[in-house]
Amino acid sequence: MKNFKNIKDFLQHKINKTSEKKIPIIAAAVKNNKIITFSKNKKGWNNRLKHAEINVINKCLKKKVNFSDITIYVNLEPCMMCMGAIKNVGISKIYYYVENQKKGFITSNFTHDISKMDIKKSNDKKINNFFKEKLENYFKKIRG
Ligand SMILES: [Zn+2]
Image 1 (cartoon, protein in one colour):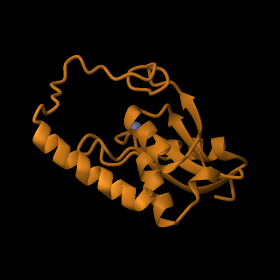
Image 2 (image 1 turned 120 degrees about the horizontal axis):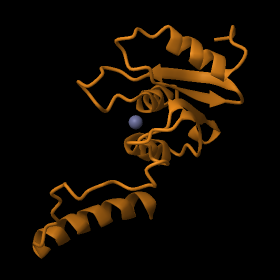
Image 3 (image 1 turned 180 degrees about the vertical axis):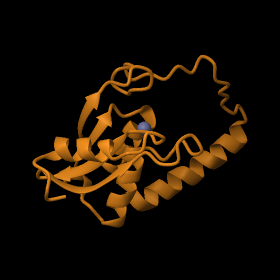
């Protein structure tokens, strides 16, 4: 990765080399202007969880990277899932190039259209309280 002038050139080169049958999305974890690791989207539509950002986060976890030092570079605006994962591991810096009008987290104004989903919450107080207590006890133990 040392042959590249900057991160933009690296990403451009990798996308240029991507076969036209594959999704041209790439993400990189960057620390102090150096690429720690990178990944493209994997598996196309067989597994919609293997987005470039998720793959990069998994690679960082294996390398025990400190996420507070990391900027995620991605050529397409992160989707809701990736934004959730990025936030959940503690990455606060994102640099992207292209807006994702349909599914971009920023462009879509931070909302999910759930109007066509069937979402139910249990009204069974007994079992709800059972689960609630188990969860509260667990988190009390680890968080004090
Ligand atoms: Zn995504």
